[in-house]
Image: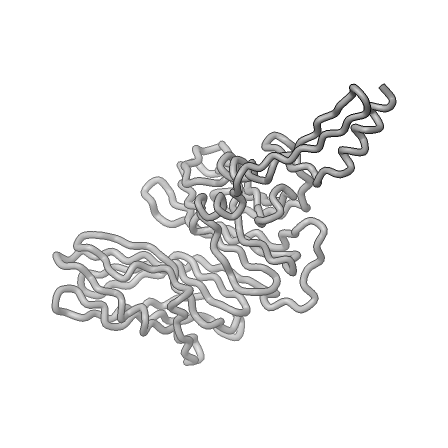
Length: 318
């Protein structure tokens, strides 16, 4: 028996590090916390899947209304680099999925043999499927827990999470919630931060032009990018074409300085069907942070509805 134990111990030493199972607890970094008049949110970073940055969120509805959560609207701003959106379920699964491979070692001494095996990281895809945060409704006094996944950056030690995409019972936008100082376990914050400060505003600014009704519900200002969450409704009888308006969009701050749109990083449909509504995000060059500015004006020129072009100008106060 002692010989078998020695053989087993030698074989286990040759195995790769054990994979975390779905039910296995994982060490986490210190929790970051924030709250608004509607929700209280805490976030941790489990050491669960090496190929992904996982942020586990617990969202408690502290209000008297039902609240709907859209995880696609969550933004992560690392201490270096620009704001990023979470991976979809398919993207996160693809990042960890691989062929199931079993590797075995056979040790024998005379008539005694020991078979030792290890499985590939394909089971991580199951972890993602079980834990990923999906669109959901939270009843008053109850909580929702789930994870959002991002592509990891080995140099990122600290980040800010902005929980946008919260809506009430009538699907009106609720103020975004920002969790600052969230830490990746075992990593120090970047010595030279490109985003040392992130500020989130919920101006709920509105504008109307002809059949178009627009609302900017959230503005996120980081050192290397500005992000606006925008909803546009088209009450007209013809489709509205936004392609040129998105390409020519600008922000003008309270001092008159103009900032260009970053089209490739923006996510806004380029067409609104008649009677329809769209929602998305526009990204711009980084604005100066308050108190250097007190607001900005978003300009979307030349939105064509039928044969008529309209300009949308939305004043944003910070």
